[in-house]
Image (cartoon, rainbow, N blue to C red; front, top):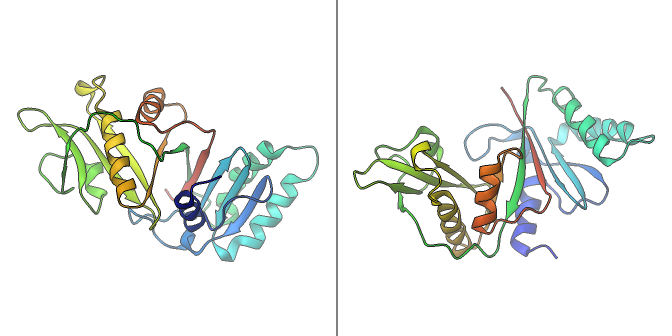
Length: 230
């Protein structure tokens, strides 16, 4: 049974959950509006063991459904159907130059009981890396004794139900367990605010996978695909 907060987040973000067929194309007006950082994401897909939801702008729903149907005919399985659809999606929705981000999608309702790390501060605070300045609310930051930035985490609020955590550590401070503590602490804050915390990382990033495991963000075999205009 999917947690109610996670269910509401997935319905809000993708337009439907769970999928009712191996590869289901649905419409969402959110694909026509900028996301948390002001960037348009005209198509996104979430693949879980039970199936995949592919979310597209309403005006392209019929076209993409026909395309998915053609790709699903014959001996091809759901994996091949999804791969073919993702490859054809940019042109089908009128964004032929879109790049595609692929990520491992994780969430938790019980963050690991790690020792808290960092202090919450405004994203415009001095000495923070540029990626943290995209956030519209406080970020969680670890500094050394001289006040220099070592690691930080931000929370992307996609909707009223889910918050995605992003984390980064400077090379000199890696291996100290800071990232996992920041993710766990940010997840606790999200849960305290009634949100389900999620965590997305490159499937090939072993270090990010270890952070997720250690912070209590279990790998469940879910994958997120996002089309982002170049």
